[in-house]
Image (cartoon, rainbow, N blue to C red; front, side):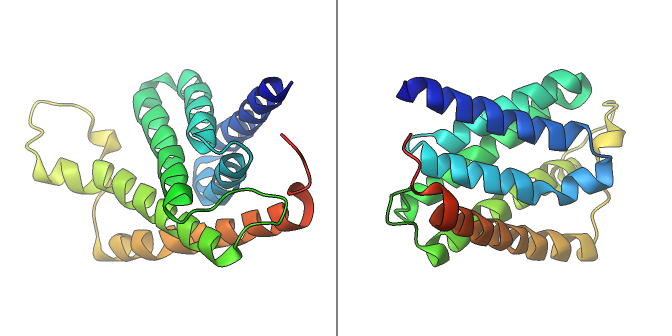
Length: 182
């Protein structure tokens, strides 16, 4: 029964990530990354070994199937976000237990993971295309014009969104979810 519950959590959280990515218009769905971060953090607490990675993979796969033109990028960055969350949960020794989680550690873990995913995805679409000669390739629509203001926003908003997600995840876990056995 425990395995079925874990699969249910992975499918449910991956589906919620898919819905927030697909059915919200583009400026809003990028701002709602906090929902994805909270779901990844909670799945990492419920499923200790790779929970966030599995949820990121399912959410990324569903979104990639819906939007095939950017499918590989969508899947890769969603999966990578889950890997970052699991990595920092392991690094900061954060485990979902009945006693609760350390709020400050979870905030730091989520801030660092969202900073890394923000910088890596921004670099893939803004910095890397400018440093590589792309003559003859026609994916100009993927290239974001780099600016100092956009650089600062990515570096500031990545950890800010992660800190909010970490706080929300710790609150939800400590208040409501720690008593659930999965």
